[in-house]
Length: 85
Image (cartoon, rainbow, N blue to C red; front, side, top):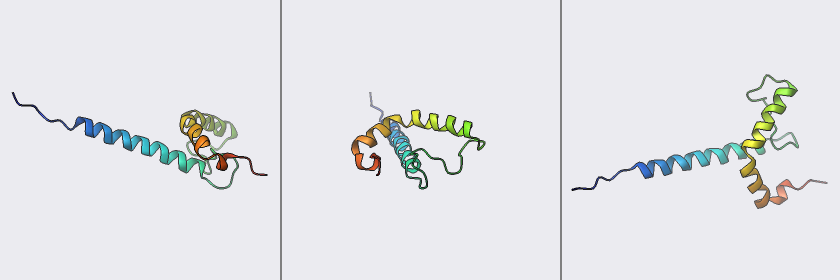
């Protein structure tokens, strides 16, 4: 009996790396927007109708979605997250 080699683990690993890279990249792009003290500021009101209520709802979703990496970022780069005088 011959063994069949499969590339499924490599494909799954590559897909996982792409997803993690995308998650980190979107987080970084979100928190580095200039013009606001709010780390999850959305300058173009992404996916909202522009109202304050929908902005706050979207911001709440971002806060929950990015909580793990934001927690880690605050531990790794505390100088960035300390309040400025």
